[in-house]
Length: 109
Image 1 (cartoon, rainbow, N blue to C red):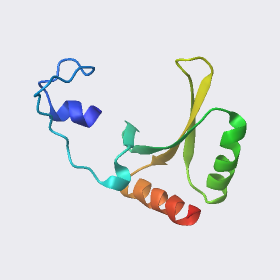
Image 2 (tube, rainbow, N blue to C red):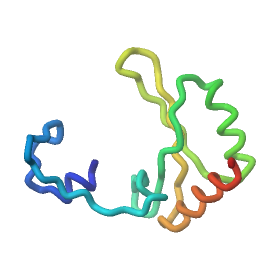
Image 3 (tube, one colour):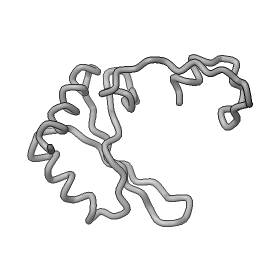
Image 4 (cartoon, helix red, strand yellow):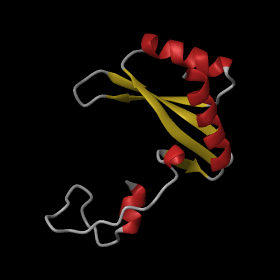
């Protein structure tokens, strides 16, 4: 979303797209399409959403065994309860993140 807003400075309300409005969608590496930079030198990408710690446990165990760096974020769901999100990352370059994502995809297939 941030990239779309940056590529379309004419958008004044990110919640509205008007009929006939032309949007410029930037091209992006498909592996890193969800990558985010939270701090300089720290790249992350969303890996999954879970509704309980129990559901999350198998995935985090697998990532740990494969030496993949990850972060867990807990937030409140709009309908109540919590949502847990795994972010793979903390890597210094987008190439390092890309390599980690490829490693996860290759080893889980």
